[in-house]
Amino acid sequence: MSGSLRELGEFGFIDRVAGLFASHLPEGTLGIGDDCAVLEGPGGAARLVTTDSVIEGVHFLRSAISSRDLGYKSLAVNLSDIAAMGGRPQEAFLSMGVSKDTEISYLEQFLQGFHELCDESGTRLMGGDTTGSTGPLFVSVTVLGTAPRGQVRLRSMARPGDAVCVTGRLGDSGGGLRVLLDDLPRDEPDNARLLERHHRPRPHIEEGPWLAGRPAVRAMMDVSDGIDSDSMRIAERAECGIDINLESVPISDELGRAAARYGWDPYEMAASGGEDYCLLVTVDPERLADVTLAFQDRFGRPLFAVGRVTDAPRRIRYFREGEAVRLGRHGWDHFRGDEEEGETR
Ligand code: ADP
Ligand code: MG
Figure 1 (tube, rainbow, N blue to C red):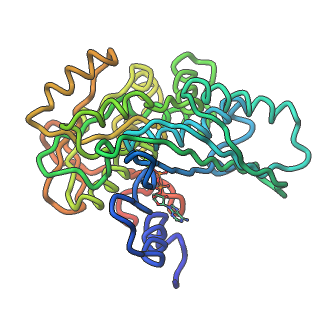
Figure 2 (figure 1 turned 30 degrees about the vertical axis):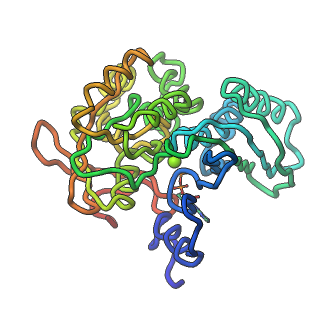
């Protein structure tokens, strides 16, 4: 491989890894390329495996997030990937690289946050690893889960004509990050709510298996990098495009008010902010009304339709009141940051 990671980008690098290790997998199993790997489970069930890391200075600042929230979040991001495949979490493994000066109380609080979400989600901590670190705190979590084989949902299952929906409001976490980065008042009530959503995202643990139990629901993934970047992941796997109506993207009252106060574009933040950890799903358009009604009944809040799958390969387009618009910022890539329009895409 020549050139730098900055040129290749996070997803280009993952494609290279997948290419180098490409091999024939047994029928019904899946390796690199979706929210979880899919393995053969007992009794015909599918076993799901996912792993995600959080690193000080990259994903969080020690001065900004409490260690309790950090423990909660480090598990939440993994549970979100299990939900995105239509599964339920079962076992977790926790690996940590910690500097020797770390206060024990800091680690205890971290474990309490982790434990709290284990209890809420029925996940058991079964092992892990602990090492020293010469610098930043490093946390890597692996979660195993299960799903009925016929209910595993992949990114590749989208079809042209499908409605594109999200299971929650977008952009709050991105707003919380802006509060931190721009050093805005953290005790102002709207800012405090945005920060809470950034630090303690709620993975859609119940919504995932429920949606996967509906045959009308086709592709699913979780929104970790922003729907702009994440729609592209579906477009790549399903060889389709996605049109998004920015005015249909659901934003919270808190984000709306903060955006008015600080001059942010809330829709752009919703599309490119990331870390919302709700689900992005595509639905058979003929059965969309039934699914949204049943979702509202079950969860007491809407399933938001934000766009449509098209047959234009790998093309994500945005519309505002029917007019095509360009997004100023794109979703998160670890080696490129949140790209400005015109840079590399
Ligand atoms: P997610 O945001 O849903 O956790 P990622 O974008 O992190 O997904 O990863 C996409 C896919 O690439 C997943 O299947 C993941 O397991 C795989 N992947 C990422 N990095 C590596 C790596 N270094 N080696 C092997 N597979 C990787
Ligand atoms: Mg994911």
